[in-house]
Length: 225
Ligand code: ADE
Image: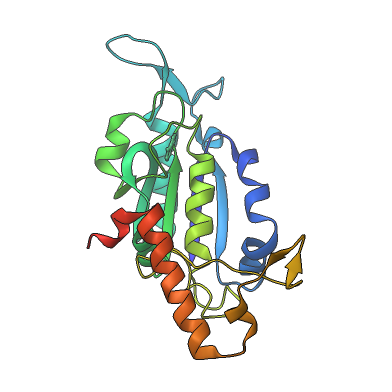
């Protein structure tokens, strides 16, 4: 998979992809992540990437020219399956969306800033608009990092244990059950007996019960379908 991220703040996207699973996924060539600075495509002598909004009002708007130039350049190089705009008024991201995106070949992600992007970019280039939650961030970069992380870990081969993504919370509309590791007792707080029993059938049953119980109390909305 190839992911191109378009941003005015590329420095915000340096560390999220340079450690742990995200770095390994790139080293193993499961994913190629390219970050592009929109400012490099500004046609303006001051390298501006934003302007006042027509009709007046507070807040700057990301200009159409540099973004269109960059998108056109990338589109001339390969066919994109999706061109995503990170925005608080997009569809709220869910695990199902991540599953679908992880199957794609080429994805472009545009990070919004200021008051947003000139609407003509959204109308003419964007194929998907995604929000990572009902709150407003200073820009789309951290949202893009969240999206890329959630998608890349689902690409086959990225996680060591192939089954571990399948047993994630949300994959069956269920939250994950509690987990424990050594020691079996700390400060008098004990690990549930069944997990130490070696009885795989009983352990499986306990995990299913706990997953259901946790989902019922914390996220009953997941059980509605
Ligand atoms: N940009 C600003 N806030 C955002 C959000 N909640 N999701 C995606 N992009 C954003």
